[in-house]
Length: 340
Image 1 (tube, one colour):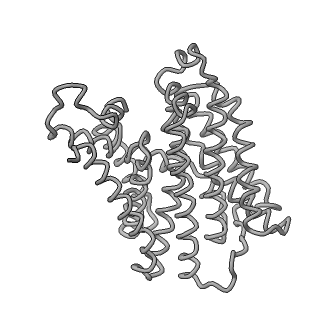
Image 2 (cartoon, rainbow, N blue to C red):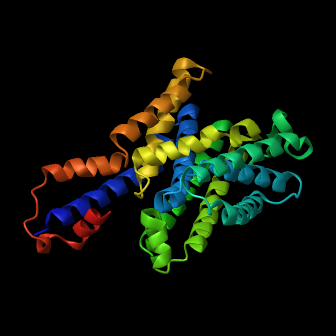
Image 3 (cartoon, rainbow, N blue to C red):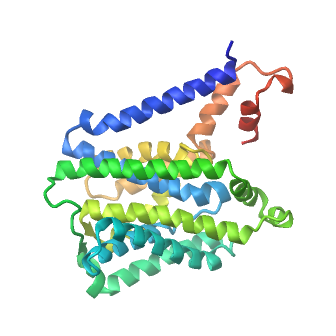
């Protein structure tokens, strides 16, 4: 007879398969161009916030500077296609590698500071990249924007959304798989030790600086891939948007809302925040109301669900479960959940 733990695992797997099936069928269930556009936007932010949680979730370092890696990936991909005449795929991968190397070099200095100082350094990185992009008009087009050649010129807008829906879905799958592998590895255990107590982790022999720089570069690699895909999909780059602090803040909001320390937490956050943002844009137009609403949502999360929705729901479920009378009656899975 399966116990409660086995049933919970089975239920999670069934929900995961059902969710994946719905996602694969979404563009065909919603053939409308706007809904496909919204679907691409949700998946892009889900991939970005999961990439962010590789740093924020595992190490506890809150970076608002991931918009810099998003923008570098977008512009480097576009310039690779326009200036170097590279195929889109080659330009995209080259831009992501270039961004990862840049992030690792920045990380060597940035991760030496902690807490509020690290947040300020990350914000300064975004502001600096924004100024560079606006100043280098010959390459980036400055505030006038940069037009990016389409992946397939023959596609209309609705079909283009369909293609990029599956490209961003594939990217999200790869980032989630990477997160899952790290979570179960010795490297992941070292990152979590940094999050809990960095000084003790270092005293125990964890190479904290190397771990932080590597995961910073890995996170930037996936963020740049999303930025490059965004540039090809959207077809036009504006430094005001791609190097925006608001983009970085939204990634933090999504990860915190769903649960930055859980595999599907940032994805859940993206599935709530992005549709909510689109609703506010439609309801209030091009005003700043959606930014105010995002700020209120972040305040509510921090006040009432500091660990996110997934831990809050799990805590609620545990409250109504009969308590185990002995630790021997708890499975390894339950013990692991308790330790998380």
